Length: 79
Image (cartoon, rainbow, N blue to C red; front, top):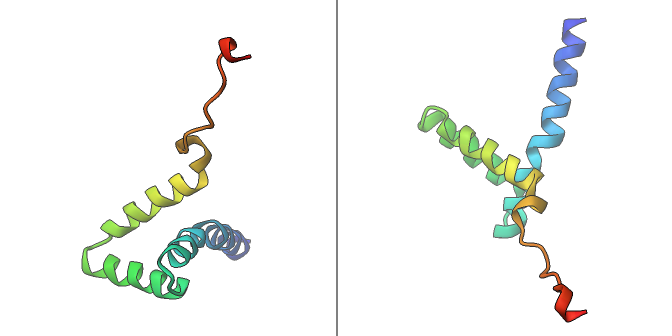
């Protein structure tokens, strides 16, 4: 039972977390697996600090509609 639960958690993490690397890969014009490898290597070299940055980026990408400025609304005087 615990292996199924662990596998389910890993599947959810893979589905949600790899979006950051794919997004950076598209923005930079490189493959997403190269971005993933760079995060892994940086995590080993700097003792895990890129993981915190990665989680912050994942949060921002998940909630980017809150961070983007909305269209300017017309005021009551412009109607």
